[in-house]
Amino acid sequence: MTAPKTLWLIGCGTMAGAMLRRWIAAGAVRGADVFVLNRREQDLPEGATQGRALPEGALPDAVMLGVKPQQLDGIAGQVATRIAGVPLLVSILAGVEEAALAARFDARAIVRAMPNLPVEIGKGVVALQSDSADAAARAAAQTLMAPLGLVEWVDADRFDAVTALAGSGPAFVYRFIDALAAAGAAIGIPADQALRLARATVEGGALLAAGAGDSPAALANQVASPGGSTRKGLDVLDDGDALVRLLTETLAASARHNIEMAAAAARR
Image (cartoon, rainbow, N blue to C red):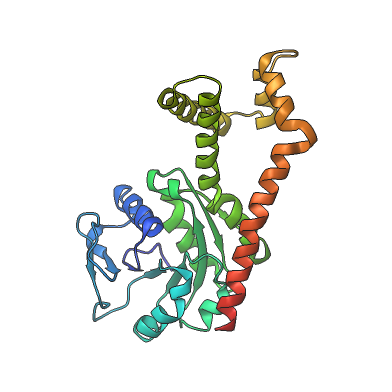
């Protein structure tokens, strides 16, 4: 199996749309080779076509499911027969396991994918998982996802946890930026200025951490001189592992819900 050239998207919401825009911008897929099945007209990249029913004729190289998890049975009833035998079925449905997909769709290879929103600028994370895909199918999925950012294969029993960390992670980062700005406003910085400062601080810090050979902990220690004001702030975050405990609870709540959604999909 070679890298997919023709692609059908079943649903094209926020995440699938971000992926599609990046693929076309990066030249990984041509707009003319993309069809989007959707319920209403959307603003798609130039060349991509859309409609309420899948095209007649040959199957594409790959189909990606981009609907909401609770729509799984409805969409399976609508398209499963038409896409039977597709070389590669990619699902970005959170909490829907490979077995649940295989029970509804006849594809030569099924790969679960969990992207996050920065895929639109090629700086995302895409977790991939498949117990059944052969080496060629895995290579095709890897090649398709490569323009989106960091691609990592994970085991099925870790997929829900990785979804919580990387898939949901940007939302937690955005909440942190808001909180940092709100804290700045609370100590006297004008709110609009505090938000600009928080955004730029997180952007610069993240870029430096991404390219540094040192660990984030080592970088924090470089900023925080002994007895300095930064160290006093870190003491609050580090007291009783307060920040680690908060984020562990945050990720655990997300991971638990992924498991609950998987159980619901398996029962249908």
